[in-house]
Amino acid sequence: AMEGKRLYVGNLTYSVNEGQLRDLFSQYGDVVSAKVIEQKGFGFVEMGTSEEAQSAMDSLNQTEFEGRTLRIDEARPMQPRREFDRGGFGGSGRRY
Image 1 (cartoon, rainbow, N blue to C red):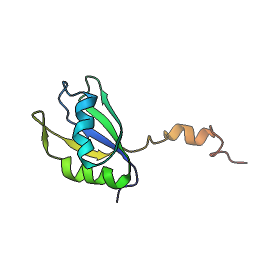
Image 2: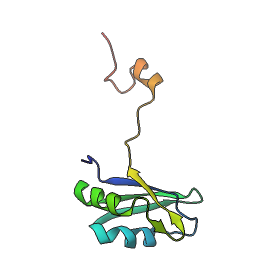
Image 3: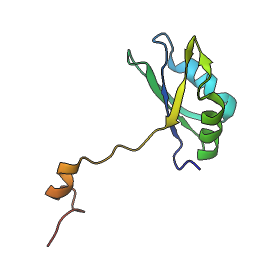
């Protein structure tokens, strides 16, 4: 099962806006936020619960929207970059 509530929505046509994304996903639950990355062809949608996010992903992944086949995935948290781990920034990586 999905842990997060945020979804990556890829392969959008450039004309799609946040309102359309919100409308599309609101069929599957409460849309907390919808963000379209301008001129990149992707966006992010945050649902109210991980169950709603899972439902939206299951229903909408590989379906056609505005002439393009959507690619939906769980939005991964940003991974910390390796070089910072060794340096001990942020405290948790320090060795005494």
